Amino acid sequence: MNSQDHITGHPLPFETKAGAVPAVASEGGADVARTFDDFFKAFETYREVNDARLSEMEERGSADVLTLEKLDRLDGALDATQRRLDELTLKSRRPARSGQLDHGSLARGHTSQAIEHKAAFETYVRTGREQTLRPLEVKALSASSDPDGGYLVPEETEAGILRRLSEVSPIRAIAGVRQVSAATYKKPFSISGPQTGWVGETTARPETSTPTLAELSFPAMELYAMPAATASLLDDAAVDMDAWIAEEVETAFAEQEGAAFVNGDGINKPSGFLSAPRVAETSWAWGSLGTISTGEAGDFAAIAPGDTLLDLIYALKSGYRQNAHFVMNRKTQGALRKLKDGDGNYLWQPPSSAGAASTLLNFPITEAEDMPDIAIDAPGIAFGDFRRGYLIVDRMGVRILRDPYSAKPYVLFYTTKRVGGGVQDFDAIKLLTFSA
Image 1: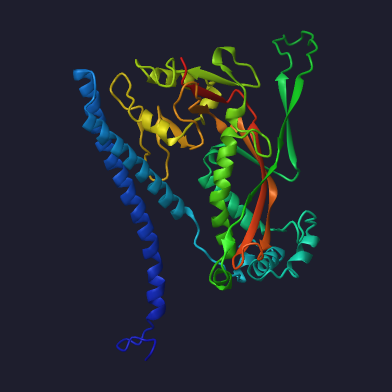
Image 2: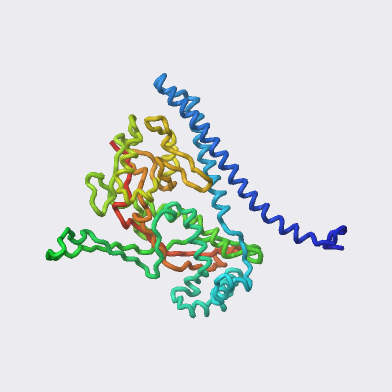
């Protein structure tokens, strides 16, 4: 018997293959668990060495050079382990590739037109033949897509790209996101609300004033990436081209978006929240972000450095604090790891589980490498409810233009999407500046 056990007569190969699948998943989970344990062990060692540094400063006025070097090495090890943990967690969340279309797709909610579009799009990506794709987009009134401007990716692929971006783009993960079909999204807001007051049951109601309205505008700018493929990749039927495209463009899109959402000047890109006007919190007015200073140029205050963080937290209204995040880069977070409160407890705490965020004074920390380092007058830390404070506008539709000529023998895929962004509630975000 070729496919049966010579003793029992039962088939074995299919059972063996089926049993191998859970082992792969368990290996990924084991990697995450091991890395998470390594992270906690590194943090415990880091705290011991930092406690020794503080003791040396109290006894001798300065820390030993060897202690400082060891602390720096541990700081780098913590960062490396955290990056590894983030990568493994993100990888474990991604769905397994499956490029095969089957009759079960209809049962899962996909329409016949969506399946037809997906098949035609994959034919275009692999071979360049667009005869079946062009009529489908004409039928869907996709006037903006043509052989010169590219073709719209299937809705499932677009949703996959946006889902991946929400996982790897730090600001997108915490900000408000809205999908639009127009080139610009306009949002009215009230500068001064109507007059209100208390009246008796039979008392005449005085006429109220009309609220003063203004308008915020969020234009969607074009963002592009250009992944390249080899002929062998395109000929490999086992490769899911939708998943491949989503993976290739996610990093490029996330890096460009991250920089624009923080520091963008609004010229051919979104307006970052740090490009908004800034004023001291005591003089705050709508249209600018309020700032709290550390009291020390280019550093935290020498005495009770954590007090300014508390001032930053309570500069935010209670309604915004419920969903607030700290936003800073990795270097700033490394400096905060050394800070303690008056009882000797560390202000920074590691994540409670794999995939969770580190916390500062019980508020989650979002790492955005485009935030400025600690420097004189730099707004190195932002705190607020970014879901209410910052709005990201995605124009529906991701386009791809297949280019087999510009970089022969490689095939380029010019992928574009339109995205905009800007501050929508200036009272929801506060900044900590390292200034006297």
